[in-house]
Image (cartoon, rainbow, N blue to C red; front, side):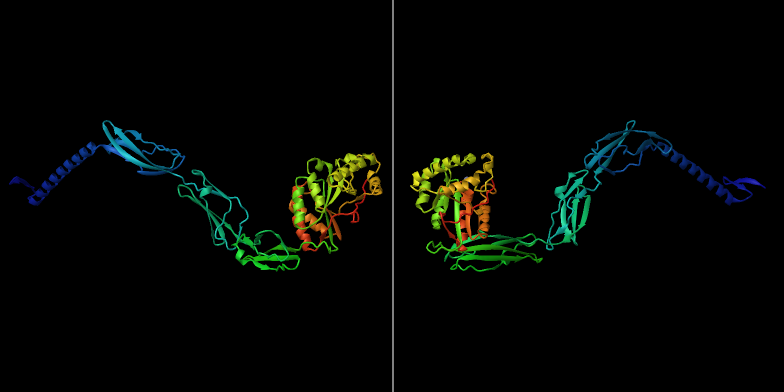
Length: 491
Ligand code: ZN
């Protein structure tokens, strides 16, 4: 094979094309090497901070630990990366929910870079609702409920006041949100029921007393229902008062709620007329008042006078010594009977016959000095049936002796067959009234025991009189020929 140069090209085997290709490859290779060298140099020189696993926004539960959120950082190039120092600015109070900004400064030699991180401290736990009530019965027409519940949140504390309750599809729903909008909901099945009747209340008194021909004024009643509220306008009233005819009239008020529960209440109207002492009825009442006179006796006399009612006062020397002599004189002058109770009202008078009579004659004398009247109408302290005398009489059965002795000496003793209960069982005017009127119905004649030393008892007298007049009773003072209502002796 010949070889020579032609125009600076080497000719091998006489082929010029091959020569050009060699030149092309050579130049390409040379350039590539230059580029690679440049690239290598550039990579080597390109040093920077490399930060990985860094989150711009993180969320953590409150009360958790906040640490190591700066990511992984170094400074260098692809061949080598050196550790850097990191300074954290700002902190997170994990006990308080909210947003916190943290700055991290990464530092290598004189180079620094800063990154910002937003930390959200959150409450992920729902509040707890505790339902206290265990009976979920409500009115059929209820629009809201008011059951007892409590609510507690681990972050907000007591949320009881924030609990909403409402009715949804025959259930009561209890709902509460905490400050982070975590919602708790509890549902309970409701029972729709109304088995309570309305409450009827009379306007004015339950007992009304009308003097004959006096006009009856209807005061009506009020009705309140647990479910329906005010039902006053639905009250049905029945009954009529004939104010020209003495007697007892019932006015009945009735109301029914929307569930059919019915209530009723009755007002009693008593039409009375002043008693006609000329023609007394067979049914007699003897009002008797023991232990006085007292501060209440004058008022009592006013009431008796108003209705032209005569009564009997079994007086004591104790009351007289208090300066009420004029009251007894007035009672006597107004036609009441002044009976003798005792002078001292001490149970020691039952020691023996003489002691008793000494006391009795003393009060008899005092009454005579005031009124000029020698009373022989008496009542034993405690009544003839008393058992207290046993404590004083040394077994002599003093009451058995006395009931004979007083009669032998011309006295007439009276017990009673209707007790007002004012000696100790009650201190209520209403109860005194009801005790007396229930007692009246049990006897052909009634001797009623009250005490004019008890204000609450005296306050019942006017209604007792009006009631009895409406029923046609006649009030009478005791006389020596009156029935005596003697008790069984217990000594
Ligand atoms: Zn007495």
